Length: 243
Image (cartoon, rainbow, N blue to C red; front, side, top):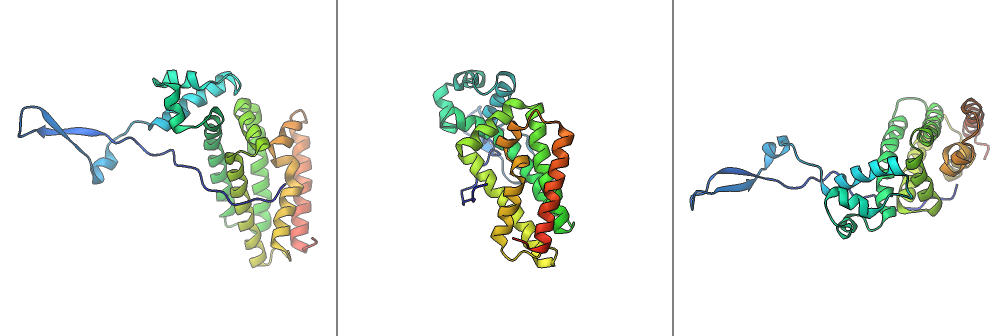
């Protein structure tokens, strides 16, 4: 796997549109006036989906039903009740829109992997669980949501921003595990950067979307057995510092 660089984190998709509510009669007339809620009342009031989140929900459904090639910004915009030019205010291209859909799944996966990295297990056990979870999640996505996997794969091949950000986060989590292993004496690695490279290089066939697609016709139990053997080799190398 190629070295990872630093890139910025993605924008938030959790912002809600501001709403107004009537607060009683206006002293200047009989029409009600409105004011913005603030404090606990604002936090308690349910809000509708923000525009970008609504566009992602529609694009996600179109992607699952039609596949990435047949998804169009025009159709997404029509269902959202806006022009396609309006969609481009939120997502500059079709690729950016579909990458944002895949990005939501990647963030869920990264959260799961972060939980593994932060668990109380020994570092060598964490490496096994981390690589197993990363490989399994993508293999299952290929089977259950092939169109979403296709976007993930294409983004990785083209090195688009969503894929670069994902690689940076994966590297940061692996680095955290390696540093813990060295600090606790579980790993005898002499070179932290080389140790991280060994983990990614050795597990590439089971954790990179290109390799996962390539092995899509290999029986799952055989792939699991091969991954298990690779993980044992990685653990042995980290424990002995033979790199």
